[in-house]
Image (cartoon, rainbow, N blue to C red; front, side, top):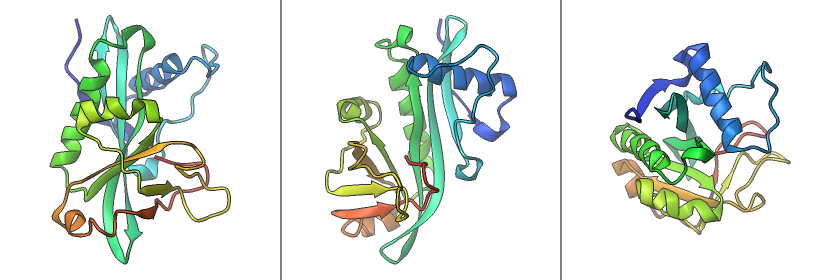
Length: 193
């Protein structure tokens, strides 16, 4: 029997719980090779203040969605943004609604937060899942870049689609500046949403 979706600050999660989160990522992406006692790299950079949403079934963690947050500058304004990160469902539990419930819980938290907007990328084939789980629309006229540094990650070069929802009045009033644009996340090389 599945538990309800739970949440915790990633930085405050006990080491055993964080290991469960890490192991789920590896089960969901079998191409990642993991040795039984291998030390894992944290899922989220501490500066992004990740909040973890997860659920268990059959005695193990089966679904996960992180919400990472930061402040950016765009069009002469400061915005508090957040995005979904490290979303995964155990392959043996896919198609049973765990991922939908986990992403819905993370999205509901975002809707009630003080974030101006939510933005992240995904593979084009997953866009329908995010639309169904959290009403996340693809914004085809927005390019997301990690930074303006050479070698920074970019939604176009990664062949990802950008999903975005405006939450605050400030973001809705800036909707025209947040459309048909490139949004710089100001992240270190190698990091992305």
